[in-house]
Length: 162
Image (cartoon, rainbow, N blue to C red; front, side):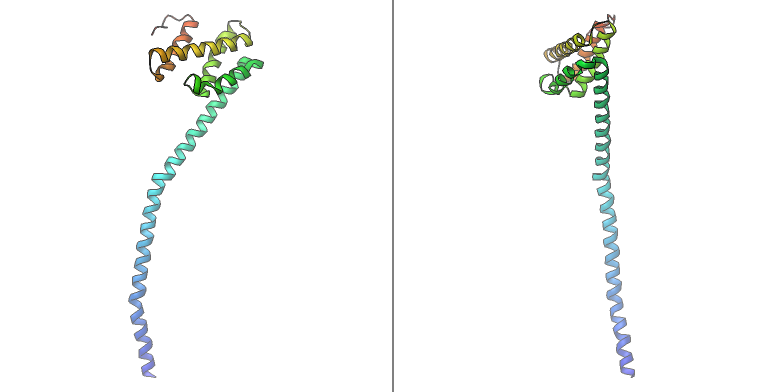
């Protein structure tokens, strides 16, 4: 019986080092996976969350501009919505920018007593003029300046100078 007891003790002693080695390797693997997860969070999850936030903000801005156009132009809002759909190709501005600017001009025109239908046509013409002015004299980032200038000109503000 003594020999059997020695073999069992010997077997436990020889496997102890192997188990410790495996345990250490699993701990190292766990640490490596934790570091990789941290890197992935910083490199992937963070930017994805930021993109999602921007997308939600852009969608909200578009919806607000669309609601503004519908309120300002009433039954003529479809003219502005159709115009805005082509604004990226024809004017170099986003649909949201076209809707927002047209809504602003429409507010001005309707406050002056011009009807919604006429205001819709004037707004699209003024936006086209602003885009033409901006692209013929300056690069695309100056479109907002041209729109601002035309808006001030229509309101007869003294600061409407380029």
